[in-house]
Each structure stands twice: as C-alpha cells, then as structure tokens.
Image 1 (cartoon, rainbow, N blue to C red):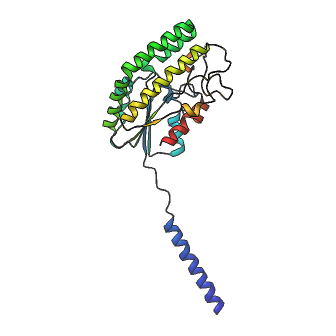
Image 2 (image 1 turned 135 degrees about the vertical axis):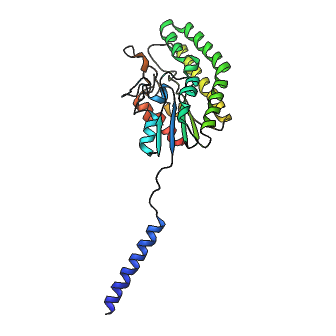
Image 3 (image 1 turned 60 degrees about the vertical axis):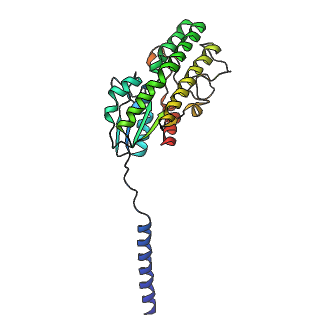
Length: 263
C-alpha cells in the first residue's frame, strides 16, 4: 500500500513539474519581420551565380541568404542591377509600407559612374585612371550626399517604423603585394575612391538615424591581389558585367554576416 502511494505521488509530482516547464518555455513565436531588400547589383547578387531576370537577382545574394536563414513573415527582393539612388526611389520604394520592419539598401556606386571608372583604368592606363577616379570623387562629394539624403528620407517616409540597414561596398585590392594587371598607383587610387564613397554614405546614413553596415573590415584578406580566397571577381572578359562584383563566397562570407550583425 505504501509503495503504491509513493508511486502515485512520484507520478503526480513529475506531471506537475512537466507542466511548469512547459509554461516557463513557450514555443518560439512566429517571425514578425517584414523585410524589403533595395539596391543595385551588389544587393541583387550579380556575380554570385544563378542570377535571373533583367535585374539579375540571385538566391546567393545577401538579402536572400538572410531571408532563408531567418524566415521573416514577408520578404520582398527588389534590388536591381544598374540601380542608382534615383531609380531606387522611383521604382523600388513602392514596395515599402507602414508595416515594413526591416529594409536593407546598397546603392551609390552607379551614381558616380564607377563602372566607367574601372573601364578607363583597365583600358587607358595609370594616368587616365587617376584622373577618372579624381573626377568621380569630385562628383561624389558634390552630388552623392544630397541624393542619398533624398532617398533615405523617402525610405523613412514610406517605412516609418523600419530598421534601415545601409550596407557599404568593399575595397577592391590588397595593396603592397605583387599583383598582375593594374599598377600599384591605380589600385591605390581605386581603393581611395571606394573609401570615399563609403565614408560619404556612412555620414548621410548616420544623419538619418540609419544603421551603417561596413563590409570593408570583413573583406580584408579576401580582396583582389590578396593571398586568401578572392571574394571579388577580377576583370572577366567573357562576362564583363560580373567584374569587380562579389562572388558567392563574398556574399555568404562577407555581406551576409555583416547584415546579420546589423539586424
């Protein structure tokens, strides 16, 4: 009889304990994140593989990698190859709403003609390269901050409650190492121009209370001319459009963790 009562008491205590544990550890709530990814070819994933459509969006681009890993309540991927601050404002912001909770954007390089600068550097040599970067830097200082500010204010107006993450561009080259192709002077000048672009973007992002996510540190050691795995495509004559864009490894190893940390 005593043994029977002890067994009954033990089972009752176990059931009660299990009930307490169940109440103390509720099931994981469904995601409430509503994510919209804006931007240019660095955001759409040109060079990352499996690109499709006129905007060349890739499932290996950092927005899609984050969405796959985090299963947001909604995910809208409208970044487009060739986008500028103006085209992002005119064609991509309509996908934002008051219910949007997360926005990412990489844009600005096309506004200062960086693709044309790289063509000049490759085809015309060092002196023309330095002159082209100088001209792009002057244009960036003069025109980019007001264009970015106009875009960021428009993002905030359409998505007033969203966390907005502005993601930078990586510098292209590791310096002070042997590297075929462009001269040391050209490579250093190109890096200077990218750093200026990123620094101007950071300034405007901070002024608008947006999060600036800098990929330059994490790309260090994986640039062109570095000894490690290259996270950027070098000049590719068979498909010039992917030249100087992140590889799939650059998106997954550089851009994705930078966005994840910022979010």
